[in-house]
Image (cartoon, rainbow, N blue to C red; front, side):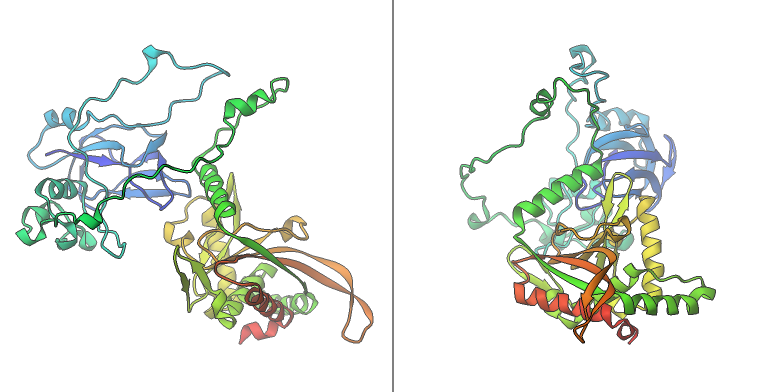
Length: 443
């Protein structure tokens, strides 16, 4: 039986992608684990590996095709003993891709140029199953299809493929006890409830009518911009934000940084103020552990390790790579890792494990001269620190005398479901103390 290779979901937020490059051609023999394509997601360009062995019978999607929906067939794989005659049946399900934009305003594709309705195809593989605790079960598309036909419960089938993946032979040899149990009455979906009406955003046409007398350019949204729009709308709609602000004096830190950079110059290390901010926040998450937490729907998850996400501006948006275990790393290690992750982010080469997770984030606009701002929490994080520029200001010293100091304004945006006001204030005080006494960060 020929196998449809489907557009994979390479990140939790991916709904569609661009087939950037094929690394195989029709007629090539591939094995499980071979890289067959490069897929551009909403976050990065990633390699896509084959999960079954066979011969590439047909490539259904051309390189550079945008807007290919997840689970759309992109190629046909012939198994041992099959020939090209099996391709047509497997390829009959046409890929769903976005139409090219019209050349001018108001232009629509003609009926003659519209894509034909796809013919009936073989039953596609069902979605990847999960265990009761939500852990994904890895199985080839063919194995999932056969399991569905035989009524097998894949949670009871042991995989023999790479990294425990369930393959064709595993489901064909599965014992009867792997049969999926019948659904219980209490597991059935509840009766439908009429949805509550909600205000819908204005359509593009409605907005354009407001500017009918002004020349404008329409900018197409790429996958990253769509994801940013969706996640930030979710964040501001569902997270009860509140904000805490503090001023932090940086003179001791600046002098200490200059001393360290002088000593580290021969090693090619140059610490930034942001490196100190990351370390100070990581230490504060350990010092005030109730703030090292995320919102998980109906509960709070608290962590023993400080995984700090840092916003990095890239072409067309931003992404937040995560520095894991920042509380245990030296300033020089944080500096080197941050430079590496930022470079990969700008090249769109970050892997999901490099930008997923974390309990807390930092957004620093100080290098752009912004003195203070409020950042939007990146769910499921419990908080985010907005860092402004260090500016010389008159301050009143401990002796009551007015002096000039370099002052940095920071704002902590907090999810009130996770962190209360007094707790957030304790965390921000710990950050301030760590930055104003930077030698303690070496301990």
